[in-house]
Every structure is written in structure tokens, then in C-alpha cells.
Image (cartoon, rainbow, N blue to C red; front, side, top):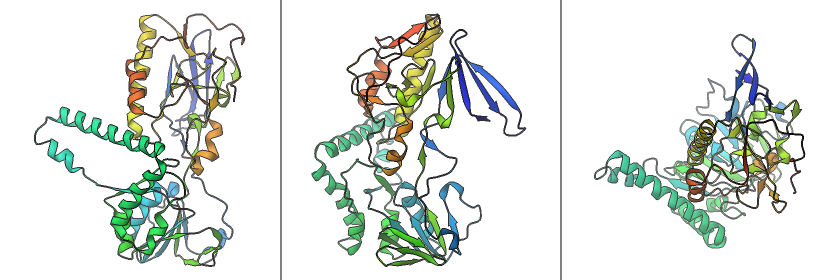
Length: 395
């Protein structure tokens, strides 16, 4: 099904959701008392791709991972992968197994950390603990470790730089390739890439993969010409240049016949939006496992809906009446994909409950153990009167 818009009616306290059945092309409509959005924050209609001069002249296959051909033959081919994010880090070692050579072309280096495919500590704990307790201990340990690393990186960025760089050096040695793994930014200013069992570093050591830092001047019929003068010969070019951010899957929101603009509103606990009734958004962490926050969000929304059922309430909506709340970017990352699309999202506030913490222990206390009824969340059974309560977001 394809949804292009949702419509809230205050008098009936329901959402109308018109949609198109993709199989039949028939237009239909659903009604709902509450919407839970699981659309994430990426657009999957097509990945982000910069303008590449001369792209149409390339005689080989030009591929974006979002539209990967079913039968792409890269055996014994020369492959250039543009990008150094999670997609590129995953593709390089896999394609290196069959291709003649894979070159990862990066505009700037990314922090990378080798992580084991299987955690040996988990196998050890299973000898002594039940599955339930092994899961709890492992989950607690990993959350605590991850939070400690992020907090340390934010507090002592200069010292934190040495941790991933030391790990890369252990993988490839003190060779000239180390220069390609030294980012100019501080850890966690952008997302960090996990390298499964160090497979990318192994491919570099074996000469099956190269890492090149540079910017593209043009794409020719036989490869990629860099501004530095270096030419990268290619039979296949993979544009692993990322995705675009998109709020609510690009679905338009209407409240009582008027289009609602979420970009001028505050996010509430990272789950709901100021002045928007009966709709929750599931967003995971940008600095930890997505499912950690997704689980807490789903649990909170269940508590919220159950509270509405018990109190026989039709509508809930966060409302800001504190003029001291100031908006800032929803995600505190400097990554290109964030900077390109963050304007499509609600603001994060500087004070609770509008503040976005991105820290699991804090979110755990707020979402699992915090009160559903607070001074911000309004529960009503009567239509809202006018728009006198609506305040513009101070930026």
C-alpha cells in the first residue's frame, strides 16, 4: 500500500488514512484512533547521488546500492566504490572476493572499528547462565560500554581519537595506508563504521582493495578522474553516497483540514510532535543500536494508549507553554546526509521533555518509568478551540 497523506479530525478524534493498493491500483481508506509511524528517517525511493560530470559517458555499469541489479557480474572486474560509510565498508570486502580490484574512493576518511562477527564473551556466559540471564547481562554490558565510549569521546575528543586509530594500525600496520584512516573530525561528530572481523582491512593487506582519498573531477568512459590528477580505472562504479533524510516517509499531515508543518514544532521525548494529536514516531539511536530506542518507544506508546483507554480519553497531544524552550537540530551529527535533510524534522528542545538525549539509561528512566501524565501532555475529550494555544517554535 502507498500512503501519501493522513488527516486528523478533532470532532471524531480519528485519523483518516487514504491509500492506494499497489497490487490493484485501487484507492481505499482506513480510519484509526492512533497512528504509530515506523517509517524511520530515511527515504528509500532513491539514494542520494551528487552530480557527476561525465557520468553518461561511462561505458561500464554505474550502480547505486538502492537499485542493485539482480545479476551484476563483478568477477575479475575493476570496481570503484564512491563513499566510505557503512554501505561502502560492507561492499568493499565482499566484492573484493571475486573482483580483480576494488578501490574505495573517499572524500575524507571515516572512523572505523573492527568488531567480531561473534562475541566470545556471550559463548562463555552461556556455559553458566540461562538464555534469559545471559541476554540481560550481555545487553547491560554492551549498553554501558557503548555509552561510556561515547561519553569519553565527547568529553576527551583528542584522547578518544587514538582508540580507533590504534585498532586500525593493529590491522594494517604502520604502512602508508594509515593516512586513509585518519579522519579530521572528532569521534561521534559523525557516525562510526563497524568493520566485521576486520574484513576490509584484510582485503587492503592482501592487495585486493585500495583506499584512495580525493574528489572527483569527472567520470570518463573508462573510470574516474580525480582533481589530484590520479585516474581510477573501472569496469563498474558503485555510488555508495548514502541516503536522504525524510520525516514520516514524506507523508503529508493534515489537522482539521489544514496542513501541519512539523518543521516548526518541537519533538516530545523523541516520540511525538508538539500540537500533533494521537500519533507517535519510532526513531532509534544514531549513536547506538536502533532497536534500543525503538523498544523503549513502543513500550511508552503502549503505556500511553492504555492510559487513554483506562481514562476514557480520546485525544492526547503535547503542548509547549514554556517560552524558555529553544529549538535546535533534531540530530547532533555533522554527517553530510544529516546536514542535507535535518531541516525536514521537528526541533529538539533544550529542556526536558523536548530535549533529545540519545542516551539509553536516561531514556530508560523517562520512557519506561516516567509518568505518562505530565505538565506537557494534554488529554482531552472535547474539540480544541481555535489556535490560541499554538505557539511558533523559537529558534
